[in-house]
Length: 93
Image (cartoon, rainbow, N blue to C red; front, side):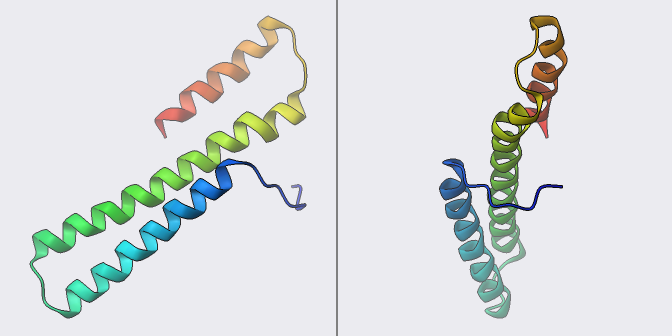
């Protein structure tokens, strides 16, 4: 595995999504401590999950679009088909 730093334009977006999730999570903790309703707490936990899932999906797509392309390089159209299908199906993660 390659351990050298990789920065892509989407990393800023990912950090923002994770900061949003962090804020939601802190809010959930405060809500539990304040004995808020389970419905309200579940709604905020859902927001945390969505923010983290969105960050993960963005990171994976970015990796496939950039890092995988570096490794694969130029391929004939038929050879690229499997790579392109793989990238497409990961959007459903």
